[in-house]
Length: 72
Image (cartoon, rainbow, N blue to C red):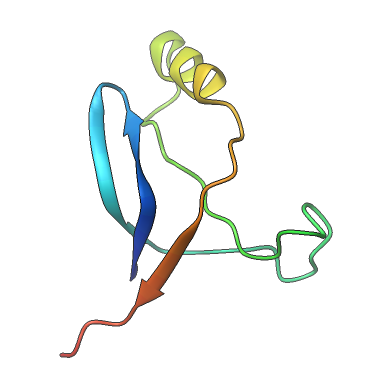
């Protein structure tokens, strides 16, 4: 996956992240968010009451980020 570096850290379930490893970014048809073709989802784990609640509380904030590819 691609590593993205966040302009400002985000907090997910009490843990702060400055970088994330992503497997997929964006909507290939740009239909979901036409003005933001590149986006990422934060995975909160298997569906249970607490994970769903945390995801709802997090919402859909706009986050600035850039990505880089690590050399192999």
